[in-house]
Image (tube, rainbow, N blue to C red; front, side, top):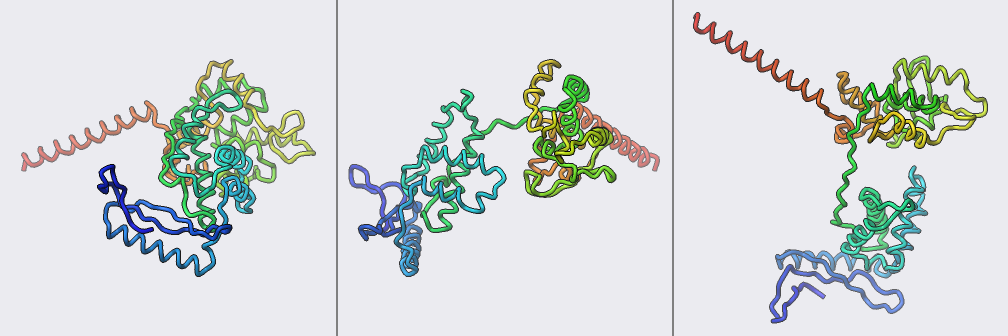
Length: 371
């Protein structure tokens, strides 16, 4: 136990200094368990780290925390899924699927034995796995799984169930999932004509409000204020868990007023089909897209379209963010697309500015000559 460096075949030390220190006591044998940490190339810094670790160990022993169970990862996973704070997460079922996938791979391992290189190996293995549709998993999906693993270990560290997080400094896989698809007014008109009425109503609301699909199909009449012209979304209705008011244009009012006249007595949902609340329109939308020849478009692109149209209309970006529920400027910029028209308009503004500046300079020179 102490501070040391590795040695080569000739017995000469090389590489950074390594600190070895006690971290727990085996509850069965009573033996002290040790672990190591890399502490850089300064021996004084390494000795300082060693002293800090020894002090932490002495405090743990004095509090009676030195003896604890060596948890398997599957035990940590089950503990995490059963936490009240975890069960309150809106996407709990998706979170549970990610956790079970992690447990299939790491479940039988001791949590303390899992290393960063093992997590990286898991990332690359998952890239070659096939999902239930026979397609390879996307990097974004694998990143979500590793984020769940990182969260499990962070909470376990807080509860002193483990000493370290193996996801520390594990890089995310590069995601190339940024979309930049905007539905033009001409495409929107063609799509609406090709869709059945119930799906056309949902697309219309998405196009003119920027609401997410889930926010639209789960909308109930007690959230609609036709008199004042807005939709009042509660915190539990939104992805970001923040309430917001979505004011609507006449096209959306026409849809809502028409649906209000045929409101089903058995349900409070706004969007219904054959007497039942609508849950999805993916197949219907895909059929209409194929019929109209519109390619590369998904329902979520309506949020990009709405954000971009609002910006082009001259609406302040802070107001647009209130409409869409974007919490950060970076996310807003991701949804606001710059196209050829924006570029041409920018060049025209620059040309106008330069011409005005040239005229002002010429006028000043003429005045100086006359003077």
